Length: 238
Image (cartoon, rainbow, N blue to C red; front, side, top):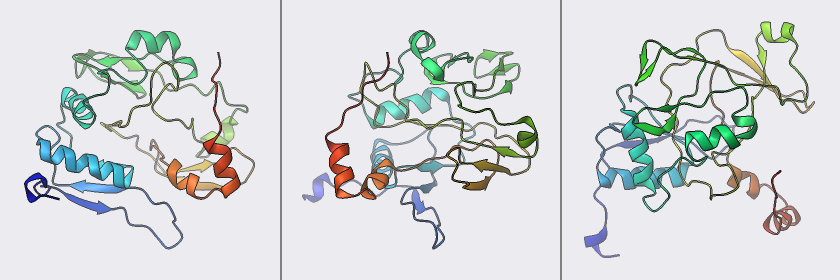
């Protein structure tokens, strides 16, 4: 490779997430020393490479991030992609969002409508241009079984849903997505119970988002299972 096309070094540090000997996941890294409001083209490319390598990267210290800059970063990661949220504009998502939009008002940040507000409760007098809004929590109506109230009050919960950030119809899934945590819930750790009768559970701080690697999952399949996946298609209702 010619030295003339080598990128300058990144101005930030990449620190892989620490794992115990029992933890087998192969994703995740922290990014230190980066201001997403003022990120150069070179650092965008290095950050993009970090996402491809580590699947999920965490960039802390972004409390002053402008929502317009958040959306701009995604477009700089993949400038050839359509300049719209993977689920389409807000009106389309409200009409065709299925269970993801059920019992939930979908709101885009004014001036950066492709950045969507997700949360619960009062958002204050002015949340990046959204005035005096109280957000309803996500619905669990589609769960096969309700979590008994006494179990919930005792600190038990389960995953609300598993998904990728794409509708899986009408348009291709996005290569990149971003989540920004403005305020986390406070409280005691909760116990997340797997809803498959396995009895498996884990402790977690409230309000977190779980990630898993489908590429690692694929690598754990048998050759027969991989062949079935490679030659299978899914058709979504309706």
